Amino acid sequence: MKIKEIRAFGLRGRTPEGGWSHELQPDDCVHTLIAVRTDDGPVGWGSAFTSEDLVRGSLNILKPLYEGENATEPERVTEKLHQNTFWLGHGGSITHTISGIDIALWDILGKVTGQPVGRLLGGRYRDRVQPYASLLMREPERMADELLPVKEQGFRAFKIGWGPFGRRDRQTDEAIVRAARDAVGAESMLMVDAGGSDAFWPGNYKWAVNTADMLAAYDVAWFEEALSPDALDDYVALRRASKVPIAGGEVLTRRQSFEPWLRAGAFDIVQPDVTKVGGISEERRIALMAQDHGIRFIPHGWNTALGLAADLQLASAFPDTNLVEYLTGSPFIDEITDDGWNLDADGMLAIPDGPGLGIAVNLDALTELSGDSSCRDLQP
Image 1 (spheres, rainbow, N blue to C red):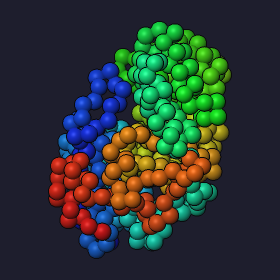
Image 2 (cartoon, rainbow, N blue to C red):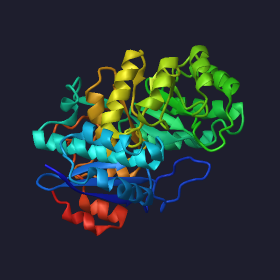
Image 3 (spheres, rainbow, N blue to C red):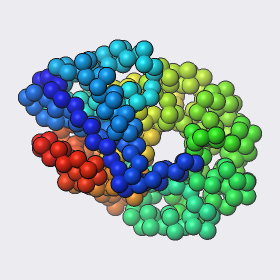
């Protein structure tokens, strides 16, 4: 079964806010779905955290390497793509595009074998997992309005991030966290994401240590992206000093970039993004490395339904990965699959047990969100 064609569908028109200092607009494209067609078999679907233009450019570079390759050998094929593009640099749009290709190839392998991807990764430890609602921070008086409707949907874990946090003063930071804790209640899990990968992030080591002390008083489960993504030494020191677990890693790509952070003990929780790091193949290797260093693997998931589906399959295959990120209010997650997503009475999300990623892309929704009706000829 050979790769015949790879196509890209950029998502736009209803792009959610990102909380960035240079805020996303609805027509901005930062997520692109990737479809891999074979000469005699199913279509596989993946997702890349990169704009459609950059994905299309990357596919033009990668085409001589993937065209005609075996579509049922995701790790070998995507490693070939990585190895032959070192000269373009690690990470960035090429690696993000390979991520989408890899996810799609695992989807194909699962469909061909009749197995969910999680079982192909070694076995399923669970058939459901707790999603945490991922929301932007607002002014303190607006936090309840953001959180309560989501709590009513059945979520029992919440992560608030970005917004004014860390960008104004200590009093505002604490008022936001206090309002959030009051809204979700003592029984709910609450996480805080400072958004240290934002442009010109002002928070330094001392700010992070003092803020971690404050977060501990509100029973915050982890403190995410407290520092600039390049501040390895400060992350190591922060993890040692902090009263709450330290999480990060969403902007790193490939296992080679994660290795020094894991070896140095920079994180309690590592958060690779499957639509950036090199796909399922690479994220699995990062998760295994984290396991060897006693670091929890909980995927970063601010992306699409295809990214969420990949995260769910990965969560099924690792014993300590009992949470996945769920970006609330995004049509790129809620509307782009045939059956959507539903929480059970315990606030848990079922891990699809069908072949491949276990989901079907809604081609009508994709046409609307990408503006490209050519996806309709990719019927299962």
